[in-house]
Image (cartoon, rainbow, N blue to C red; front, side, top):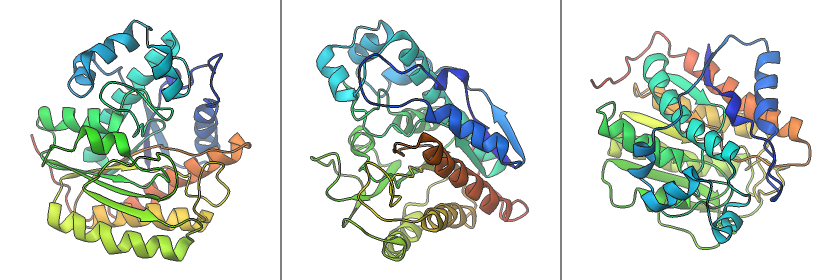
Length: 310
């Protein structure tokens, strides 16, 4: 069973400026619904303002809420912040928090959007307005639902915003595997960065992932994994520089879930990046990713108990 978080506001209309395409979000859900897989959809509430202000500069949050983000920040984000975009990002941030709670109950759950890992304290960047990974992590720990969270970022771009926003915390660990020469030009410092060479294939990628993820899970000992599951390491991705095949992406996703679940850890994934002229094909990659992770999780349905914290 795939438990997936989705809301109608995820599908904001394309703003009049910028190049980002929002239509993949409804295409992902079309692909999931057409797959015939067992699935339950869950609608999130919008993230309360205080959750966002606990991570982001309150002045920047005010700019987003009042739709008054300066033009220079909008250029950095990649599109103007309209009322629909404001409502969208509040729901996507609430969606990652909800996916985490569903994962604690079912082992794995997915947010069908978000993974906005470039957003910084006082500005958005790289198609990201608020950083749902940092916001959800902070909230989950503050409310006592988790004590230590591992953020696994396997998007082709480094999770610079997440690394920056959580840099001073010892209860959040950030792991980023990314194309070394890709955006952002100036990288932040994650707890563990694994820069990868252009053109790296399935074998080389899995070697790198296997060399780092299990050891980090054992030494950091999280009780929840938030997984930025971008599909832009795919060989045909418009903005990627790596060369993973469809099979390679599935091996990656199953490995993350398997390593977490065999340790009794719940995994909540966020959609992350995926770009191309054929939006339907990009949506298929995202849908296959979530379905593969739900399938892997099913192998542990009657296995190790998940760690719980009241």
